[in-house]
Every structure is written in structure tokens, then in C-alpha cells.
Length: 475
Image 1: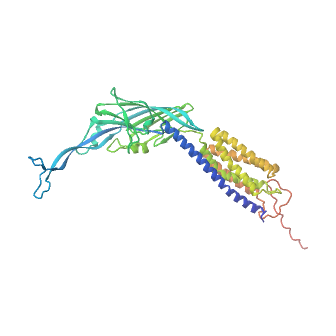
Image 2: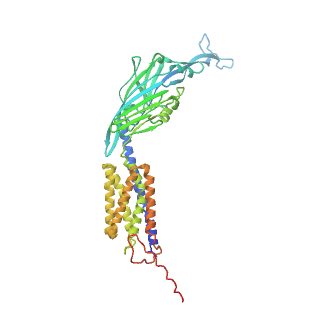
Image 3: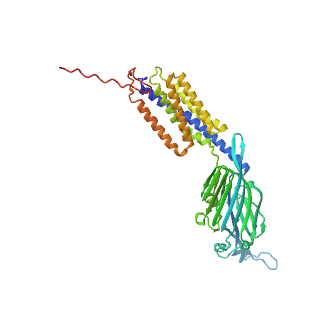
């Protein structure tokens, strides 16, 4: 019973499930290395300037209102200057209406026409074995503000204090700014100062404008550093934004994709045209729209690194149990006629060798890149398991079948990892083919363990049990 094909098949199935444990540990190691890589890249990126997101410019117009306030004041004796007391020796007070000027919420005015050209020059910074793309950017902006819209935002007796208006430009981190920021209008250069972060903004620049009704178009030039990602918010009623870079692998993200772009080995260019109706921002507001601008309207580009072997390694490990199972199944089928069946410990050694493949591939990929690492790790694993099949499992000439199947499996896995779009299709076809092949190879198998005929068998052939003899006919 214990040596029957059915029982051995059941044991092999349990061994396949047992291999889930090393595969799980391998997946955890891959995740740890990916997290370490991510934290290292973030650390290097922050030192260079971090992920930059530009929102603004916005014109901030202070608002004041004169209100009547009833105040309680002491009644003083005109001769002594001492507060009067009533008959009960209590202080005497009177109520006086006083005119006071109080500050109200400012008016936030966004540009009418907003045009921006951002050019970036990239380089790669290294820390240990990790590489981080960083960039130096220069932005040229042109914008104007519809100051007539401020009157519609005022309530009651509120008055706009035009002379104290300011233009604000918000950036992720002031540490990333490089060089002098220039803001000019009507031939006059405005002085820009750092803007302290608060609950509504992360940092940036401010420039007093005087009365903005006397100004037409503003132009701004800004230089800054950044890493990994560059984004901008389309704050204008009509926003025309262009990116140009020498980075060959852009990945666009955010609320809007570019209207058109070109990418080559020499770099990329991208253009956006965002109309007023498409942006989730009002033209004029009494509340800051910084959160909406940064988190709901912004878009940009990731400086993508195409050799993301951590993701490929993790995906490969997810297929690991299926590939180990197919290898076990192959060994089970081709050793069916062997006088010495494969021991469970030998199955486990083969499974551990294949589990180690994923770690070896990841370790080599961090040094050589994914393609070369996969070739070396896959070739070493196929050679090891095939040699073990020949020497330890005594498969003889059937070792060729094992080696060819392993080569096919790792070739299919490579195609799956290289093409995410067809990964499910390739994996499904492979699984279906494995099941169909097993059904064909075991079509004449007697799973109860009755002895097969010794002749007429091949690698995958099973001789059907002899038909019962017909009873002799009576004459």
C-alpha cells in the first residue's frame, strides 16, 4: 500500500505544500531588501531635495472690516480721576460703541493664464549598491491675476488692503531651492523671501507686490533640486505646462496625463493643457486651496528606473510553489519505472535548491542587473537539480527529460517576468499543459499499486491490465 503510485503521489503533494514555508521566507527576505532599497533611496533623495511638488503662484490679498463694538468702560470722577462708586460701593460702568478695524480671511486669487516650462538635468547618486536618480531643475513661469474678481469675494463692509498683497509660491522643501529666485512685473523686480511652513503649507516663497492692480503679467524664474519625482499643480484658469529632461524613462502620474509627449534614449518632453473646467480649484476663494491643489490636482513625472528587480523577484517567488510542484511531478513521473523510488528527503532537497534560486537571483541582480542575474541563477539551479537527478536519483537517460523541462520552466518564468501584460496567460497555459501532460502520462496507471507488466513500457507509457479471459464455449 505505502509503495503504491497513489500513495506516493499523495506524499509528493504534501511535500509540495510543505515547500510553501521556504517560499514564504524567501518572499519576506525579498520584501525586506525592497524596503531597505526604498528607505535608502528616500534618504539620499531627501539630502538632495526630495520629491518636489510646486503649487502656486497664488495672490493673497488681505481683507479688513470696520465694525462697531460695544465696550464696557469705567466711569471716572472728573476731579479725582478715580472710578466712581454707586450707593452700594460698587464700580460704575458705561457702555460705549467703538469703531474697530479687524482682519478677515484674505482673498486667495489664482492666475488667469499660467504658463510654465520646467527643464531638468538628471544624474545618479550612489549609496552602497543602490542608485538614486536626482535632478536639477529650472522653472520659467508666466502668469497674471484677474484682480477684478476680488470685489465679488468681499462680504458686507469688508475692504481689500491692496497695498499689502503678496504672491506666494509653495514648494515641498525650501532646502531644495538653488540660486536666486527672480520675480518681475512691468520691468520691476520684486523681492522674494522664504515662506515659513504652517498647517496649510509645507514651505515656499513670498513676495510683496504693492497694489497688484497696477501690474500686468508676472514672470518668475526658479532653480531647485529634487529626487525621483517632480510634480506641479495647474493653478491657472488655463494652465500650459511643459517638461523637458534628459531622463530616458519617464513615468507620468497624478491627476492629468500629458496631452502629448516624446521619449527616447536622449530624454523626454511632455506637454499639458489643463482648462479651467478640468481643475478642482476655484478662481477666487476665501480659504486656502493648498490641500486640494497638492493632493487632488497635481500631476508630474516619476524618474523611473526600469531595472526594478525587486518587484520581478517578488513576482517570481509567487510562482515558486507552482514551479517546484511541476519539478516534483516530473521526477515522480519519470522515476515511475525505477527500481528505487525517490525518497521524500530527496524531493525536499530539490525543492530547497529551487527555493534558493530566488535568493541567488536577487543577490546577483543587485550587482549585475536582472537579466544577467536570472541567467546565472537559473543556469546554476538547472545544472544542480539535473546533476542531482543523474547521480542521486539514478534517473539515467531520463535525466535529459528533467533537464529539458527545468530549462523550459525557467524560460517561461523569464517571459512571465518580462511581460506583466501576458503573465496570467502564460502561467495559465503552463498550468493547463502540466495537468494535461500528467493526465496523459498516467492514463494507464494503476494507482492501487498492482504490479505492471515488465515489457512494452517507455518513459511515460503504462501497460493497461490484461483483459479477463472469456469463458470457454460449450459445444
